[in-house]
Each structure stands twice: as structure tokens, then as C-alpha cells.
Length: 75
Image (cartoon, rainbow, N blue to C red; front, side):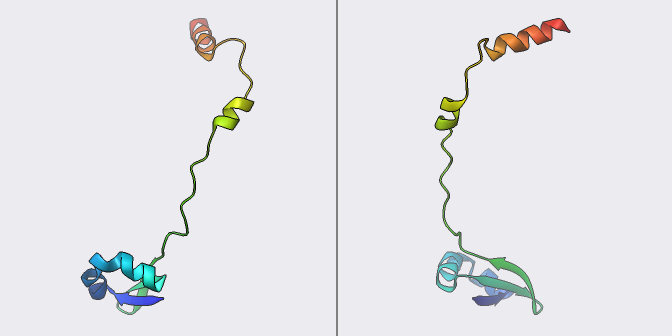
């Protein structure tokens, strides 16, 4: 963990990625009080694959466009 004040943070903004990678966590202080915590990303999550969900969902006997059109015509 590394602590920086606002002035140090502004001076190191170009190297922020390296600092976070090295320190693991950066606490930003203003007037001696912590105002922010910068953490590295834990890991990237894979986007869900919805193909299996689509395959398991039963098909409607009537297309949804026709159902919507019929409902609108009833109004």
C-alpha cells in the first residue's frame, strides 16, 4: 500500500498504472485524510455466453411480432 497526497498524485498521474501494479493499492490523501483508494482490477470476467440459454428456451408457436401486432389491434 502506498499513500500519496493530491500534489504527489498529480505529479505521478502518468505513472499511476506502474504505481498501482507495484504497490497493489494507493490511498490518496487530502489534508491528511484519505479521500480515495485506487486498486488494481482483480481480473477480467468473461462475458456470458447466452447461446445455451437461447437453446434451452422453447420456441413460441406464434412469432412474438404477430402476438404484439394482435394485441395492438385489440386496442
